[in-house]
Image (cartoon, rainbow over all chains, first blue to last red):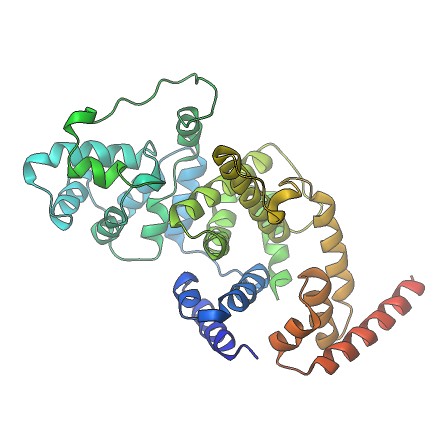
Length: 190
Length: 173
């Protein structure tokens, strides 16, 4: 009997039923050699579970996404933060030299517009962004949702796709001059 | 049960309220993908593609023969398989068995599943649970017994009763 998996599944289910939409990975990590059992249980549960009504903020974010507007911009508006405030918060939380603020601002602009490969962004940026926009389940999710229109652009510059109708976005920094800011926003292996 | 939500989803689709519909299902789809993909960025990427696909289909006027919850989870499964196939092709690796069947061949499977779910809903609770886990989720008898915290023998008996009852129901039309 997979008792550890059953216990962790009960915890996961209780968290879901409280409306938390829990990330299942920390539960899998605790399951040890019963990880596969737990994965099957959670997956079957999520397929059948009653889906709770979303928050008005989350609905507004997806309505923006459907209008091809940046979801992150919509979230920032909902939280009443200016772009400068978010950029300042990122610079502070990530411990970046203030002299490099303009570069952070350029990267944030690209992130908000959905023009960065999210898989190459360091987790610390998303964590700092969640702090900047207020810790709330919507924040980290929306930070990684590209506007629907941006996806066409993004795929046009992915390797293996035909030469695109749109040119590649210029690099923020020439290769020889890359620093820790470039690494944070574009340095992670996808 | 999730099918309690089907009328609400159908109304949201009919009214074109895709913002509410997608906002409700996005976290669930994302967490299902996190179960399978170790890299969180990959899970977000696949979730993005799932909802772009649904957006294209719904805005293009596509009508689904099954409830939206079935469509959204099936779209997640297909998109996940397509993503893995893309990764394996890029790396020149052979496709694993899990995805070798192709990412997009399953609308019949979706319809069959919906039909079987509608049949199973006519069964008593325990029999419906057992039939669903064994015939729709593909669990073994042992796994089903563990999931429901009952003896293996009880699963066998429930399956036997359910199949007999379904035969009677189908004979009665």
